[in-house]
Length: 311
Image 1: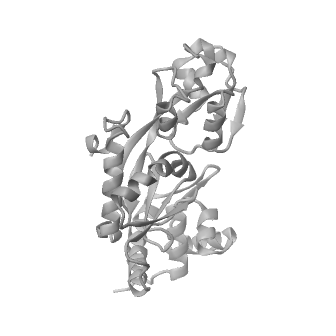
Image 2 (image 1 turned 60 degrees about the horizontal axis):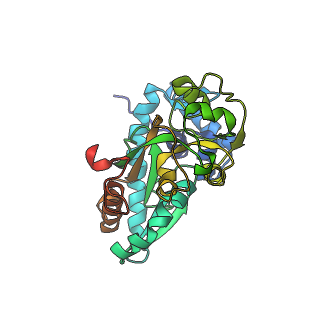
Image 3 (image 1 turned 120 degrees about the vertical axis):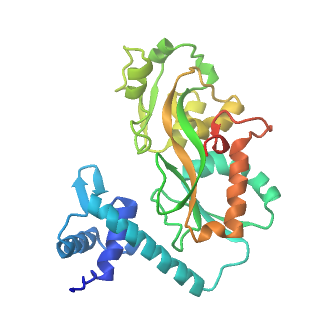
């Protein structure tokens, strides 16, 4: 019986990185090689296995059915290797934990709640890491992460925190009372939203709620939601924003939501590796997040759907 020869480890590592990031460029950055080198490794792997592992398009790369099969195996293999290396590496200080998230979530949700976190978890030394690209919690950069997605990652331990939605927000000084009032104000656009799909942009809003004469091509464009929120607070225009990111501004009444309508958002997940999910520090942070998403600062139920009602 002929024994199948395993592909080179370097090719499998490149494949695993591309599959996780859905990007040749970000995979190359993780491994510290060029995108051309990654492409060469994937091409060699596909030739060796005699099948296509990725579908390439202008919007990025996605796994073929054969790629999904290989990714299930590679995710397990490399997760096991990372855990073994972690166990052989001298441990960091007791109680230390690194959480990776986006700068928007850190700025608008987590930082205002850090004093409460320190009061309730005094023994947990939390290190905060921000990145646009996804960080693998099984690696050495972060132990866990807050991710915004429309689906769970089967290679990780996922805890649903809440479902987001996108709402209309503006400064109360603009005195917006109905959708027709939008015609009198500047529209703010956030250009780099990848989640959810369809995008919660002005064209989507117009199609759902109107008004028909709204010029969605006009307005000011931002590549960062934080800057768009600050401009809305300053009374410079109207924004379709993540409800979670503007929640504190709504409670302080420096922003108002003049319409009951909303567009569907993604979900906030707390993710970690299967091995790290049992760490006392990870469990403590997860529990604090769950409790914090379930109540408001005043102790009443959140307006957003809490994870306890969804799991």
